[in-house]
Structures are given as C-alpha cells and as structure tokens.
Length: 145
Image (cartoon, rainbow, N blue to C red; front, side, top):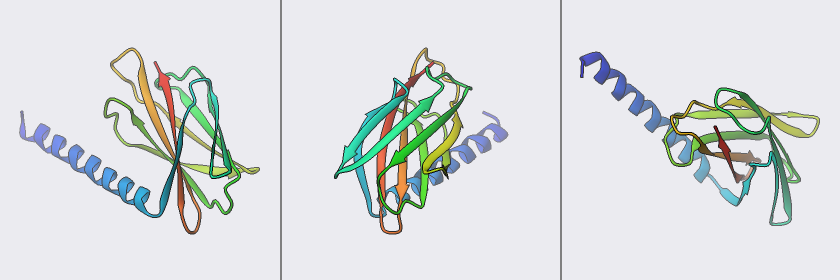
C-alpha cells in the first residue's frame, strides 16, 4: 500500500469515527426510542405513548442512485428539528445524514442511496424528532436494489 493510500484510508476511518461519535452523542441526549417501522410498501405508521407518526418514502421500489423523498407527519408537540441518519443494516455504506424541512405541517427531506455490490440492500433510516427538551427516535427499514 502506498503512502497516499494509507493516508486516505486513515483519513476516511477518522472521518467515519468522528461522524459516529457525533451521531451517538446526539442520540443519547434525552432521547426516547419509538418502535421501528417497515416502510417497504412506501408508507407506514407507528404509535408510541399515544403519539402517532406517519411516514412515506418514494418513489418505491427504492433503487440506488435515485433521489428519494421521505415525508414525516407527527402529533408530537413542539418539534423544531427533524433529521435522518441513513445506514446500511448489514454493511457500512458511509455517512448519509440529512435535514428535513417543515412544509405545510409536514417534514420532508431528500436523499440518494449509495450503490451496493449486493443485489438487495436493507437500509435503516433513523428519524430524529427534536423538541426543546427531548428527542424522539423512529427507525425505518426498507430494501433497495
């Protein structure tokens, strides 16, 4: 391995370690986890502590390199920020985090899936709803080709 390749590998490792630490520290600040939601059909709903969460993801079926839009709706009061951490369920696929913007009472964000060498990849989209005092976390699962 050349010096340049070693340097690149070490840099990528450090960047991913820092991103993981930031993500873990944000998740641990007063967060509560909500049951996961299988969104392979393009839509799912979950209820936790009498609070409803609804999600749509499209276009479905999910495909690598295609832009996808995630829409979230919740009755959780005081939400001031929603962001998503997208990870491969069984394989590291790099850092993919994006902010969702509020539009007409719904939260929406766009992302693009990385290319995977396997035929089908299972993805985990961890959606973090932030209020002034806490975080609510919903985990979405879906498959992509």
